[in-house]
Image (cartoon, rainbow, N blue to C red; front, side, top):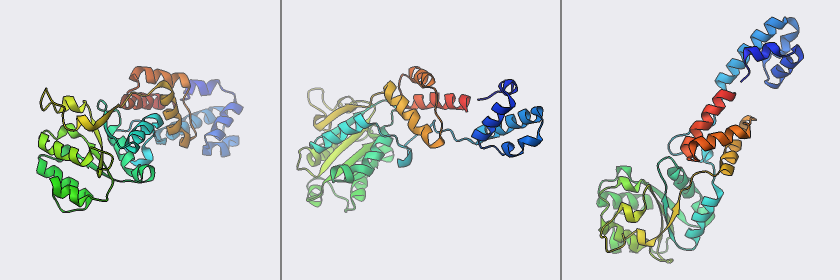
Amino acid sequence: MVTLTQLQTMSRQERLILAYDACLPIYDRAAYLTDHELTQQLYQQLGRARSTLPNPFGDVGTLPMERFWIRQPLMHDVFHELRKGNNVSLVGVSGTGKSSFLTYLHAQSQAELQREAIYLDLQMVNSDSDFFEYLCAELAIATCRSFYLQRQLRQRQIVVCLDEIEQFKQFTCQARTELRALADGQIKPLKLVIASRSPLAVLFPDNPNETSPLAGICWKIDMPPFTINEAIAFAEHRLQPLGLSLPRPQVMRAWERSQGHPQRLQHELKLVFEASF
């Protein structure tokens, strides 16, 4: 951000270059302005330009596809496990991007895995019957479960993305056992990607002497914080369409303050952007 004091210390030529680079209309009539008028109008127009410049940071909630930034190592690991025939438990604290990740995976499943995919947000599911009705509706089949559901899914290969599973507090052991029967093994019709804040064995401790049905078939992958290199790449990716950049030390300090937590990192970068442009 250029202050009025900084503009006043610039030469006329430097102010004209600034107006030209910022594509400001003042540049075309600068010859008719005194130094004082040029400085004042340049400062006002730069202020208006800053106020209309979109801030590319500060996303909240599930992101649309065009806003999602691919974390290549993590995406590679998840697709690798699914290609091997494994189910995946994706574990991370709130705000790490699990829902956006599932949305992207759902969209890319056919291209990457040659499997159809469905996405289930379980926040509004209140019973086992709700769950199987929701599942079957997304699969475009009549509501059924157990053996009847398995028979309906013969010859199909489907990735089921289960989001907000901890919100489904009445997800019984019986329902998860039935889901396990549809997903346990390479030739079974379903492959599960389950997002949660806690590991499944902790989330559903059915019996301390037994493994929770879904935990026993899911390969756990942690949703890690951004590395410093990921934070730098993310900032560059978001700023590139605007033709802008942030000094790397500022991005590094934002990463340090956020400890790499994706949502907090965006908040820190949003503040840096507002102070810089």
